[in-house]
Length: 324
Image 1 (cartoon, helix red, strand yellow):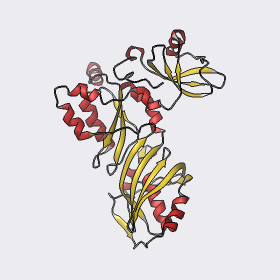
Image 2 (tube, rainbow, N blue to C red; image 1 turned 60 degrees about the vertical axis):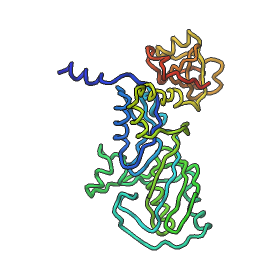
Image 3 (cartoon, rainbow, N blue to C red; image 1 turned 180 degrees about the vertical axis):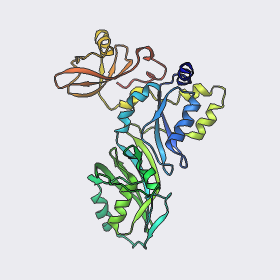
Image 4 (cartoon, rainbow, N blue to C red; image 1 turned 120 degrees about the vertical axis):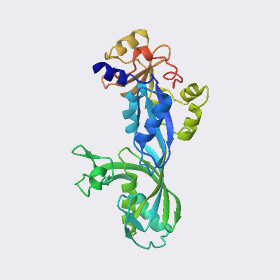
């Protein structure tokens, strides 16, 4: 019994890297992940930041050792294009829910729109939707909502760094949003609809950037087609980004042989002179191979935080590119 369980855990091959998937509408992030993991025949994979079935766009899929760094993408800023449908409210705050309220929206002037948009820029308080994946006593809120149960939710402080109007018609308002982690776009749209006095819900939603990633995304269908070709697996691996791309916006520290040895043992060392101030850094050895990430402390010491397995440093994906 134990042998069978162990064998099951070892199914698949070791793949390290990040795939920027353009998740299509109509499927969950978990379903998209399952398809991609199967295409790569990967032993271990996870995604960073769910998109609803209604939404499309960037879903970073982390393979193998990349899963050690998922938290940094979960905490990263994100960019969305969203079209709000004006004059209606739905049960779920998006196009998948039943309409629960209708009104005829007026023709808003640009000054009126500008005044409302201004209220939602910067640091704001947001109460998560009952149809979010946020958990209450271990249960996702959306599961409770589908049972007709509503529970109290604490307001959360989020940041909308920019909120740009892309288009306005009488019944639609299209926006580009740059926001912090924890921002619920459906709640933002519902709150804006309330501020306009007509109600609103999310008609379409597309995420086009996560953290440092503004790269080309790969279509799920194209990946399926690629997998059927004779050199399909090699071509799929070529689509992966290196592990250090997840933290490419952090300063890089290059360690000599001795410091690399101690850091890989998990030991705190004196930071090289190149470390000018406290904070998170990317770590490389003398051969410019990515070792993981660490934190320069206020006392000038360097503490390792997330390290790669030594036996897999220098792999075809891990060090395919070094960001200096």
